[in-house]
Image 1 (cartoon, rainbow, N blue to C red):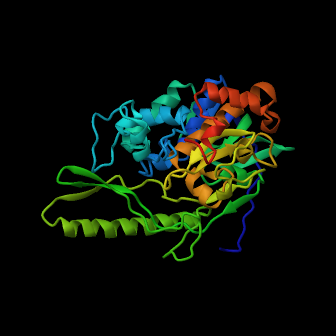
Image 2: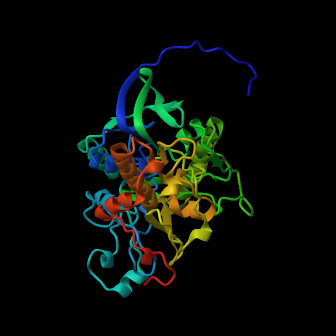
Image 3: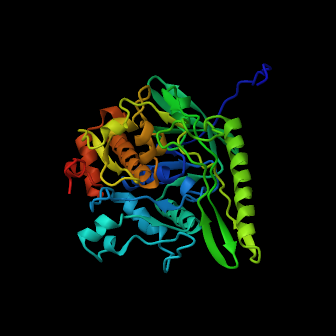
Length: 414
């Protein structure tokens, strides 16, 4: 990096709008947060740097709902996660196995026994293009102000609060005010800019899910280098990447697309007589764990089966049957800023717990909790999420069909 510096002249930034809640990041957590807040009558703005909603699930082609159950026949995730799962399949007429467009097993749709649910987990996969369109309609119909092609570049703080986020887009540089801000960027960009403690990993590997069309049959290519689910690099084959610098993100995309080109060449060798075409290369870097908030509490693998008094949702282990995580509200809260929440993969979780809670369904769980909490805090505490009565939040989440059952978390849950 050059040591050269230039002096940017000071200027007055226009405040173009004030909201109750501003959500930064239009991935699955951000969409859930924005909808949840709007359903509580909050005035909401959703800021997304790309030109579509759904994040990794749609623009990244990671179009898989990992399980909403614990692998022992118990559903542990419902609420908006189940609602959006159903929405993602609204255009699907029948399973398309090669493309990985699949309904949940019949036993989770009212057909089958508990024994069937133990054998088959509650999961589905979808057409990312159809889901992107459905999410956009849902956001617009919810009355949320949507800002595409807009990047948050700084925050303005007053005391222990964020007062505004500064954004840039085709209209130039401007500011948005709010009572509560939700960081759903996936990379804790707002948390970092607002002075919160964060943790970054440099263990991401090349990955690029994409589709192929081979003589008319659509197939999903789930392309990735092996990685350590605990976030380390020991025993893994690099190169490895951070996700919190511009150079690292660019390098990851280039390396991943070179991996894609190699896989495509291999497929063409296997199908020498077929017309093999690549479709929909990822429009986002397929980064897993980048930078996250260090909140008042950090969820770790040791917290499996541990109930917290401020639990606002549940997560699970999508690899292994049995483990269930209770997600405490404190893991979503900023420390330095009383009106800041984090949702999705940049919540305060580490190691193997982070790996599990970054999946689509837990991201929606934390997004719904953050959006609901933000709206309630606007109504009752002038946006101070630390002062929000947690039991009121939990009661509201239960009304929204969020599963907050302590028995589901225990080791003996059946």
